[in-house]
Image 1 (cartoon, rainbow, N blue to C red):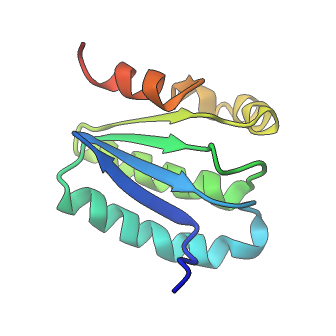
Image 2: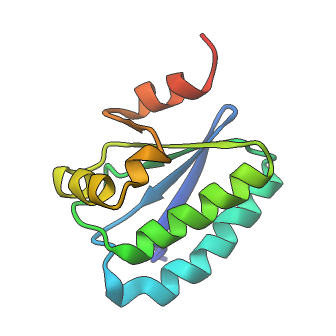
Length: 121
């Protein structure tokens, strides 16, 4: 069976990874919203406090993905957690800067850099 999820997840040690897939535009907003509930449950089940959102599988994203990330971030903040982004496409970087989300969520060029920012060396 093909996984049709838009928000894939994985754990890498203490760090929880969220991998949006495809072009996450407005047409999938309802599905993304439902999947965020699942992601939050997975974060709670793993007792994760450090989350990396890795955009390596995304060329374009819209406001529905930003809203999803914001929900995850707010959930983590209530539990003293942290959220960072990595591999954001150039167009996405501009969207994050204009919307000032880059002031809330640190952005790193690679997953390794993002993970390193969360866990002490």
